[in-house]
Image (cartoon, rainbow, N blue to C red):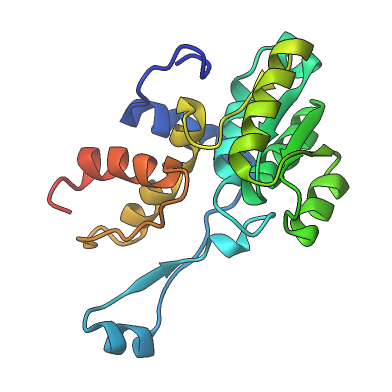
Length: 204
């Protein structure tokens, strides 16, 4: 696979390779059923507890895999991302563990707790614009000017392969699962889950 400037569709093989890397840094998260929730929904429902991850969110899986695949030169120059919170924390956490500088652009009014978390993880945080889109455009320009490796929050094959490891864990923890309900923001988690389900549970 290549960087976001020359996209190639991630495959199930990429997810399997991502798991080899991700499990060196992150433990599998629990999959629990809650009877009251299942009763309310009318079917057995299991919850995948990605809130047990170091940043409290699944996106760190993608950050770890992406940073692991960068060249020494790319890590030396550093990475940059635009985020309203979790993506930025993911990149900051992974960059810290791989010894790479990280810059995260956030829009004005971004969640203060998440901004502070990024800073505590060692990222330089830059405020720009009133919404994510204006911040993203500014960050992309900074990446071109300063030679950072830009990391899009969703349109990035390495991130998709990394977060696909969630679905892989779920279907290994309970192979009988026939439906995956995935929240959609940027789409990386849904894309990763779709790749895994198609390969391992096509009837789901």
